[in-house]
Length: 83
Image: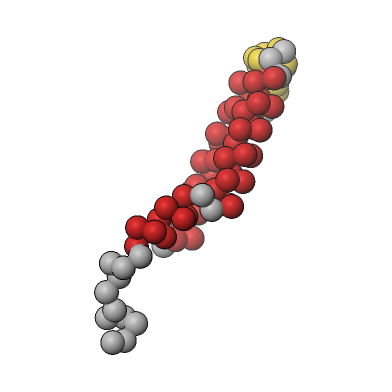
């Protein structure tokens, strides 16, 4: 049988469970946890200048917003690469 016509049912479940604990995923979870710890440790008020207006808010809000914007941009770029 050619590789294109070979049945794909054998071993399919095993590869999914092995991929769940892949080193890349473990690293991403570790980075996410460290980011959250860093964000929520910084709670003091800061002034941020957004072009013209000056906004005063807790630093963790600014850091969390930046992390979410970065995640969204990264997801968008990754989705565009898959197409």
